Length: 334
Image (cartoon, rainbow, N blue to C red; front, side, top):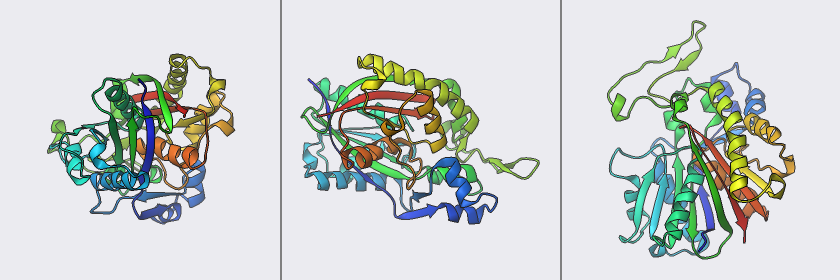
């Protein structure tokens, strides 16, 4: 038995913030400087009263409508988010109701960031091959913007909000899902973190911390990212991850037609591409108009650049980031 990606849809919130708006708030960073450093020109941001679950519902309903899918045929829902509605109940249970899925449908959340989509594919494939489910709905949805301090110009330029929905089944579809390489290094956990809000720091208050020069540094109630540490981790871990994924699929790099990596930022993607000697024409970029949407970047890139762009062949996917967590797999056009 095999497992296949049958369809992908996504939702972007209506509010858009471009580089000129960020530059107005932080005049020391011009719009051109932001785009040259990140490769990002604008990003979609969830509204004040719009949350990850709201976007997840919109992505799921869009998938059903665009692909003529009967919600009652979904027998398992996987929901990837790091911005859940509540500590409990499980947001996937709420989505089951709002999406009109059968009460015989399994549903669970899993908390992962930039590696989340590839991990989700591995879980979905396991459910299908294990005979536990026939039609798995994988939803990723993230609103990192709600974690970002208004003074944090660095993270503000990078992250955008989005949600995606993917149907994985045993019925042949767009792509056959190949073998996986998965990895974890929790030693880097504090390099990309929101410290306050969970049970360990439930009621802790925090204030904005500034350097001696008056530069904003962090607030433990907001998103903190050690960019230098993340870059160091990525530059060392991702080449090993990619090579392991190739080995597990009995392939060499030249046999891959396209590489679809997590769209962290243009500088990091260019560095990894060159380190792996991947030709530019084989490397997928899709972040100029949406930014880094965390677990959503890979499925959006597949949808826009591969499905709509009518690219065929073998695709190597790689997600990496917060955790540290990293994952790669190969998908093959049917």
